Image (cartoon, rainbow, N blue to C red; front, side, top):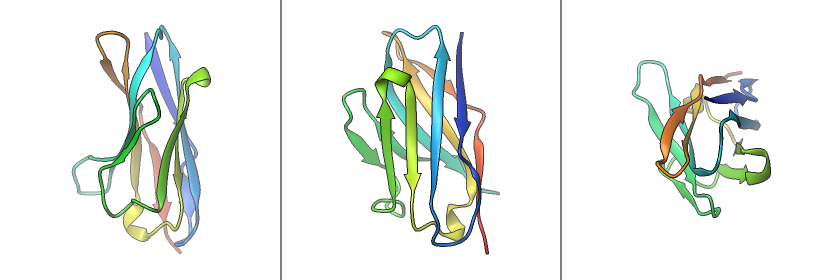
Length: 118
């Protein structure tokens, strides 16, 4: 049994910053890729960023590159998303997604709401 718990969401003004965290717990041998997705109101869920077990990163949405940074702490089974220069269009529920074990079984967190508004 694996649990993913996101934290760090909230209300922030445009131009502000937030750091999201997602901690994995339970029966974990090895975490492979870790990702952040987001789903804005009325829109489909989209990939924001991904990081491999070795630390290689990929930012799927050109709109966040240069403003968001994904990182991970393998010792704590935790992935982070540092979000700077936030815009209203970044408002969404942010979800953590990870691949665990030799079969890369996929797990989702329940999400954390980020609201960018003045």
